[in-house]
Length: 78
Length: 415
Image 1 (tube, rainbow over the protein chains, first blue to last red):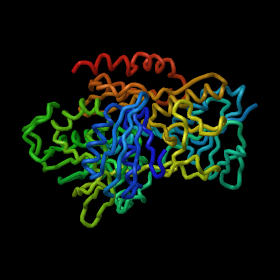
Image 2 (image 1 turned 180 degrees about the vertical axis):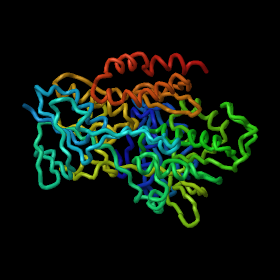
Image 3 (image 1 turned 90 degrees about the vertical axis):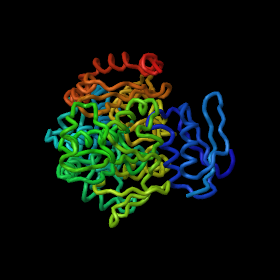
């Protein structure tokens, strides 16, 4: 695991869903932080993309692993 | 006899206590209040002016043999198996279950304390709900901003339930709702009568991407939100409130002006000092594994209901099912919580739905009906039996026949 990457584990979350954990982490973040989100909710990719566009942050990577979806987000604006 | 100590006499604490065999275990509930409240009814106090009595003494809700002590636990040492109350009382245990629920935190957002004290809310108490009702019933027109101040909130459907019941109330008072009120609701209201008593706007703000956080349920309710003239501001996570200029500012950089603010404050975990302190997260919620509710590193300590960090909704049904699983685990049987949620969702005008999902299955796009509304209203009546365990056979059957897997086959594929 990289140093300074905050893991947000939202696996299993269906309602209210992974954005809850992302928004919580965002509140306590600073510019330059990197989040790695783990989720199983299928809508997480589209939602995270919409969130990043809205907040001015950046999706670095989005990949599907057998047991989870992994999304890396860089905080550019806070 | 092994001692089971339960901190909190809410739904989770009572259901756990009432499912333990008191011939085998010495069971004690400790709560700082001696009253238990049916919290889902706050909604009807705040938006319908309900005067129903929704509290009962905890001491009358426990089965014979279960002890109840009114005391405030301030410190828990998980390594020494000790909890500390006021007046230096020490409670020893063999098993402990933390079931305190959450506490509202209006001081973590600038400006929110003033709003909270003046307008109340519909999540934290009867008093606050009555306060909000006094503003709702006397509302003369303008913009009502309604929503949650933080993504961590009890009862995800309750936020929109508030907006729906508010809209029903305002139209019932003869007001128009929405910027252009050209769309008349298909709810039986006489369009000729609406809008004669003033104009209002309901702006529903939410930190989520859409009106309802879980997308499948949003597909069901979004058309209703639009039809009723409720405006939605998604990705709006409250940062500050400028009380002077009546404006809410979001972390995402937007602002919203209001005449009447209805803001559910952020909620946090219990104000208890834990040893080790690492069992609480930054918002004081207690870490627990999502299937067995065990606090990491301890086989004798559990956290159930709203106070834990499980990746599920903070709602009565999860507290209920987690408590049932923990009661089995303490009694030496294997059991696990599968993440099942079943949150009643009042969509106003006499209809309701349920938000149903579990860890493995997404939320069902379950349509609102009058029957489900009747079930929600009935729950308010049989709730007290639920706490005692008397209604278990009904719930067992209900959960079996309404698994999200089954319901999704029926409802999610019709698209």
